[in-house]
Length: 391
Image 1 (cartoon, rainbow, N blue to C red):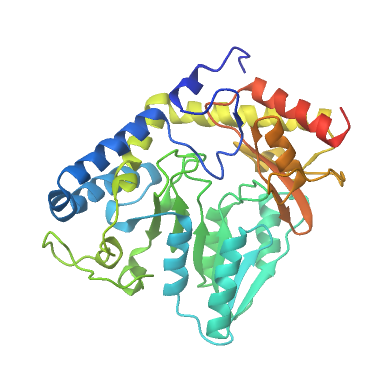
Image 2 (image 1 turned 180 degrees about the vertical axis):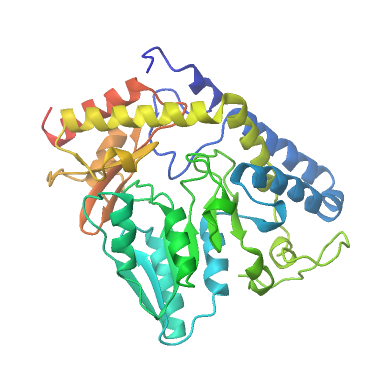
């Protein structure tokens, strides 16, 4: 990778001196996407009646068409929502679980997703089965075999990440969905980190639901996400919020109606998803993936070489994001209000990178985006070496 200064950073509004390594949590949009959202918002504010009643549905349809092409599905099968949590709640609240049924997931899943499905299972008298996977992960074949050891004749739903949030591992969801179909098990994929980071094709994955945020690796505005829904389930979906439903513009009834008009809202973030797609497409989506994955590989090499942190998953399981186990460092917590002292200390070096607790282990996760370069990684390593006392 070129060690020259990163010219792509000028496309973002990040403050000078900030090393932002947390695109996986909150991915800021490039200027052109911010400007596009602003234009949509100004149109809304200039004539709300015209925009909300007569234009919003058609503009959202256009975005669904472009998003559908990007993720490999028909526009009618994808619903624009606020974020992956919103999408996952729709899926979870629409599943008809019976007492005694089981929902199978893994110990790598996002905390709020586990919390949601625990509640859904409790309310239904069902059981959430959290399958513990091999550590470290070995091969996709062994992964799938071990995961399905947790399935029984009572398993009705599988909930699994495409790219895990705490451990930054890419799971073989296509094979999981294939085997689930053989066993007549519904599949719900949690995919906010996969959008743009990986090539997506919903037809090939063939899951029942796919929940995602667009503000992460796609770099769309905050407040944009989607739920892909297989057609057999579209008419049975239950909205999280009951409002008028129906079409404001008087169109024929559609399964998305209950989810589009849920009261007055600003749709500009969802409409601008197509501007984010165009930004990455113009840059070169393969080039984007190759460069961010290569930089993540450099992160892996340098952090392990220069600090006591150890990578959590093998390199063949990762792409643009990598997680490390932190040592038991005894670092004194700073007065920043952070739950983890290392994350707070990193802010003293103008570095933003999250530290989470995963199954009793403290993980530092580093995201690599187009505005990052090797100098950012070197600065992170210098800071960690000083903070952990092994520099």
